[in-house]
Length: 377
Image (cartoon, rainbow, N blue to C red; front, side):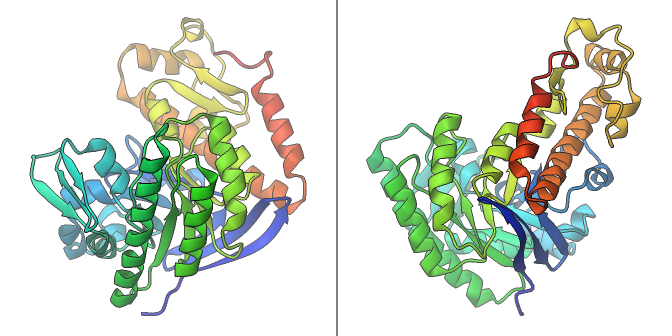
């Protein structure tokens, strides 16, 4: 089957870029923020609201779906797009990070990783070939190579070992992917922790193997923001300019703007929905903790000019009440507010890059975040 994946740049402003990814299920405008649907669902939010917020693409989790309901069952039911009724692009991660972070017992070897399921204790083997097979069964538009992620800080020897293993797994993923001859895309993942020499070696080797896109993994795993941004800024220029660049698991609105300015095209993170469920709203006035007592009698909406009905039509007092009363609707509404905000931030960045004013856009956005007259935490 021919690869129906492509990427074209439409504008750049310094290192920041805007473009479009073509996939079998539609186009993805970049820079793009991809909401996380871990188990084929955005937690607490209807797919229609996610789409209305402006999301072109979702991320689903290979580890969770291979354990429940299983990749084979999803395939028998028509694939992930049909299963979850999301006819738009989907990216799946490889499952490697969840194996490292969730599995109670795991053993990493050259062949792959063996782990005990967090659901029922069953022993599962995940090899590079199986990671590709699972993602093909799910039918995602973009699949990721299996890699080993090391939490920071870590000894250089440990980072180097995991990086080398991830590169060998990348080669095996690429061979398995080419053998399957599907119409999906496969991304490689740059590892190397906070060591720039290792990152450079990883990036060079992955580029020589040849992937449809390249991700920076192993960041936002314990290091400071300064370290993360330094790694991003030094590594991104080493990646092929004609392929998408994906910063995995990041992050805050400030993280996104900083990374876009360093040439990143794609992001995913649970932060908008997780923080929403805990009462934190992201707005153009900065973050607002709706649980704070002074919102109890505040009739104002979160943002009267927002595209988001939840931010525009409900009072802060009502949203505060929902959390105080333990109503699930509160978390749903703030999750929707945050998803809209993240998509609006991406749309603003795309427009600013196209107009050659990205630095001004970042400066104005930061100024609004810090404005004291409207920000009420």
